Amino acid sequence: MKKLIYLICFFMVVACNTTKVSEDQEQIENSDQSSKNSMVDEALLDRVQKETINYMWEGGEPVSGAARERLHMDDVYPSTPKDVVTSGGTGFGIMALIVGIERGFIPRKEAIERLDRLANWLAKADRYHGAWPHWMDPTGTTVPFSKFDDGGDLVETSFLAQGMLVARQYLQKGSESEKRLALKFDQLWKGIDFDWYTNGEEVLFWHWSPNHDWKMNFRVGGHNECLIMYVLGAASPTHAIDPAAYHQGYMRGGSIVSDEEYYGLPVLLDHYEHNDKSVGPLFWAHYSHLGLNPHDLKDKYADFWKLNQNHALIQHRHCVENPYEYRGYSDECWGLTSSYSMKGYAGHSPQEDLGVITPTAALASFPYTPAESMKFLNFLYNKHPEIVGEYGPYDAFSFQSDWMLPRYLAIDQLPIPVMIENYRTGLIWNLFMSAPEVQNGLNKLGFTYKRRGIE
Image (cartoon, rainbow, N blue to C red; front, side, top):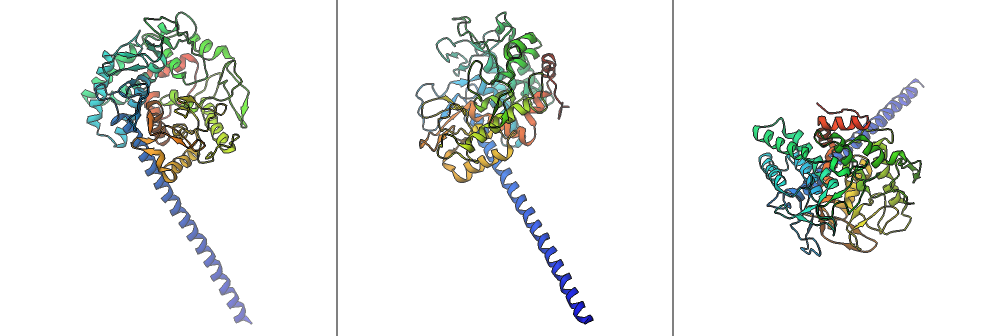
């Protein structure tokens, strides 16, 4: 009887140990698989960053060193010539080149030479009270963006200044040649006359033309992509705006605050004044925040992290729920923002949805929606490589309309590597937020923020 009990106990111990070994082995295998998946994801992030940086590095306009407005791989340019450059996209490109230097994708010496050529070109290009036009040709001469838009564009100039400040902070502790280049960018940024663009009112105007004066009459109120213009306007050490322009102009005297929800998520700020549309295109959460870190960024109107994260999540939920039953929309195929479409350039959003997915929407949202954005990145590169070209994913596509063109836009392509780098390391955020003027501007406007990663 004792022998039988001993045998039963022996087999029970063996069984328990076997189960434990099996569980331990499963944990090891799961851990190994997770590690492998992580390595694959990191390699894919490297790839998309390198390809999109090359839009600026290899595909940039050779005389100026600036970012071309568009690159069409089918070499068909129905309107704007190939060599027209964009001021705002160039600002994004400056930040992309710095990511490329840090990642080792491009040689530092050659990149610094390229940035120096660009700074010298910008100093000689057309400016209007310190603001560059939206478009220029390789000589630096203004190319009209529209009939009356043939002068200074303060919004595009602010995107450019964002990049110049990042470059200045990155270069100012480098070699002597890098310090000299940092000084050039510093002088260019300080030459922007933000106060002129108030036209004596408590708001900033988007345009001014020497031929048409203030005829465009575009008073810039939020919420949209223009937050950076007001922050830099308050931050300017030479031509600062009164904080009232931000509070009365951009924030509409506080009436911008919204208690509306969309797909179960608070909108926080009204996206459209005097309009029943709810949520705008997703680039509104990107352009101002390539440098301006939304983490813990708050004022009396909103928490800008929640604002932007909810914006991205709303877009994702819209594509998952797919109320218009468009072919292809799913948990891994999502993202609506202004881009090319079957009907020309269009401002895609949940309320203006043509069935077009624009890759920059999900990919530049990596800081806000890392899991959802990674699914989309894998979806593109592993399931639909035909959507990816020399400079990364093409601008837009529609499975519903069986439509795609092998074409790129600077303002869609270049935010991708910058925002992915902010997700991975916070590099560009840390550089921009380390600028003393930026901190001063935010303080003047009543923002609170954490100085994470700032020396």
